[in-house]
Amino acid sequence: MASRAQLFSEVGKFVLFMQRVMKRPTRGRMFWRSLVYEMNLIGVDSLVIVVLISLFTGAVSTIQTAVQLTAEGGILPPDIFPMEVVGSVVGNGSLLEFAPTITCLVLAGKVGANIASEIGNMKVTEQIDAYEVMGINAANFVSLPKIIAGLIMIPCLIILANFLLLYGGAIACKITGMLTVDEFVTGIRSSFTPLYLRLMLIKSFAFAFIITALACFEGYFTEGGALEVGEAGTRAVTRICVFILFFDLIIAQLFL
Image (cartoon, rainbow, N blue to C red; front, side, top):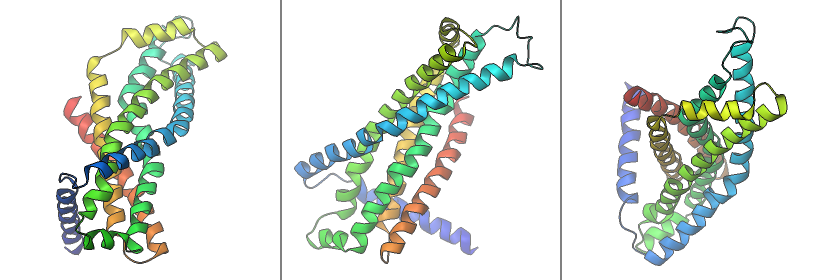
C-alpha cells in the first residue's frame, strides 16, 4: 500500500509540476535566449555521439542480419537467398527501433543526466528560491526552454540517426562484400512502409518529452547537497530509460 500511495503521490506531483511548467513565459526575451542555448546544448553537442552510435549500429546490424539469414541453418541456402532481404530487415528495424529507441536511450544518459544535475544544482544552491522570491515562475523559467528544445532537436537527431544507420549498413556492405550496396538499397526501397516512418516520428516526440520532462522534474525536486544532485541525475536516467521502453511497447501495441 505504501508503495502504491508513493506512486500516486509522484504522479500527482509530476502533473502539478507540468501545470506550472506549461504556462506562458513571463519574460519572452529571456525565454527565446534560453531556448536557443538549450537547442545548441541538446542538439549540436549530442551530434558526435549520435553519429558514432548510428554508424556502428547500422554496420553491425547489417553484418549480423546477413550472417544470421544466410548461414547454415538459415531460412534459405546461401546460394539462393535473396540478399535484398537484409536491406529490408535493417531498414525497417532502423525506422521502428534502432533510430528512435537506441538513440533516445543514449540521449537519456547524456541529456537527461545533464538537465537533472543542472536544475538540481540550482535547487540546492537556492537559485530556484531566488527566482520565486522575485516573482518568477521558476519551474517554467528553468524547465520550459529545455522541454521545447528537446521536442525540436531530439526528433531531428533521430531522423539523422536513421539516415546514418542506413549509411553505416551500406559501408558494411561495401567493406565486407557480403552483399552489394545496390542489393542493400533495393531491399530498403522495396520494403519501405509509410506507417513505420510515422511511428518513428511519434516515438521521437514522445521520447523527447519523456527525457526532458522527467529530467526537469527530478532536478527541480532535489533536496540536500552535491551528493543528492548526483543521485537525482542517476535516478532521472533510470526512470527515463524505463519509461522509454514502456512507452515503446505501448506505441507498438497501439499502431502495429
